[in-house]
Image 1: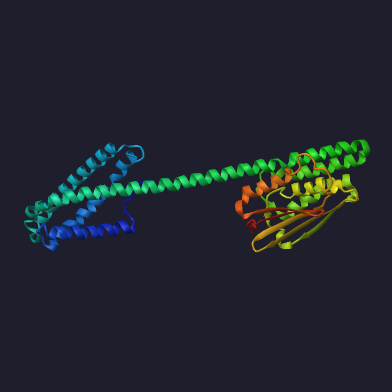
Image 2 (image 1 turned 60 degrees about the vertical axis):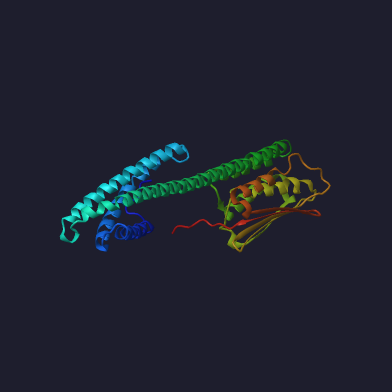
Length: 353
């Protein structure tokens, strides 16, 4: 930050008004004519504007948060006395110059009567300039602190999103490897096919690590790829129903947001039903919000599995970390139906032509 030389409109207005006030005081108690008073006050105010800019450096060298009151008072009062002395010297030179003109003859003899007034006003003006700089520094420091706080908050949120997203693939991979291990002893060809589909799914997710969001259409494609792996194990027992609003396909969503929900529906729903069942996925975009629901049947009497709910907690935390209070996450159990509903702002990536 540097001192302002040209000044803002408000500063210019201040100096215009002060020049008028100084002229009034010089023409009244000072005993000068209005012409003489204006001829002296206007140049004096122009010069003193630049003299007062030195207050910037004294304020910068004496931070109000660190310097004691004794140091502040001594520094700025000394600077004000020096500045006012310079102003008196300028006034003396100006009076002598103007006295060389017939219209202002004798001004150099009458002006010294106003020196105490000019000196006192000089001290007051300088100290006001000091106060204005401290206010300016305080406002700018507050703005910088808010910017740093916002930046730190964004960085923390991004780190949390990356950490939460990193939990998804290991969790799914662990379950898939267990399934493959079980199939190797009962159906080796299916185990091989499952390995190929799993490799394809993981290959498709490799590039998602650095992405903050992907279109819903791509997320649905990943879900279908995931279910292709699971269908090797469950066969016709696992069915998928989709009701997707076409307007929602290009809405951006966090990568692999829905995969834990579908995985949860398979592991805690379909896997416990002898006859299997359907997983219903709904998505619609209305009033600037994207609503997604994953619904499945489950066996209420089935014993709960260890560490159940990890996927649901992951999705909830990712939504809170990215959208805050603008997102909602609701879980509903009604009879034999388990339903998870999400809603968050519908964001679309700008397309370049």
